[in-house]
Length: 265
Ligand SMILES: [Fe+2]
Ligand SMILES: [Fe+2]
Image (spheres, protein in one colour):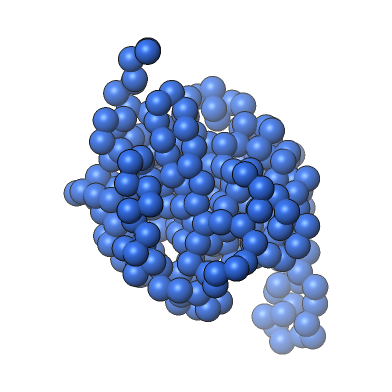
């Protein structure tokens, strides 16, 4: 059996927004993977289809283009077309702390080069749709992935809840990467117990937008106009992500580096 490397990397890319986000990710993924040589690549795809939800075709395209697992968030069920894929053994997960009986599952185990990495999707409760307490949920389910490493996509709105979950699982996960706000935060660090935490990784989607959406539509809403349908913005995209370095023997992070690239497409 070949000797395991001392450390390995995980590349995580934030919420992919619509076609511009998908195209930017597909275009840049080969060079990002060549540069950072991640053992695992994980992408949040909750906004991949027209800005809300994801379809099976889009999820399969991402998985074929070098993504090892897709996480979702509060928009996980907006395109019911995804339900059959969520119910298959494909590496796509929706928030775990939801009502029982819903399509899909909340975590998936990836295995490469002798490393077992569980990718868990949890959702926050502050300013979010109702869901189970993610803190207690984690404690209640931790024994299910005891024999491997763990990365959590914590899909939540407020920074305090995300920082708190990081401390809650410090020493029990390799990383907690925040998603949902589409705005990257500047607080990536490794906590004393060895958990890398980033409050929000940001999005992969149109740069000249409001959270990936057409800014003129959103501005008209803020200016007190009539309700309008959101649409994905156009123009150059930003690619936001993080690379987490993990110690193979213990599954604890040794570093986290933030990625922000601008694509001209
Ligand atoms: Fe999102
Ligand atoms: Fe979200």
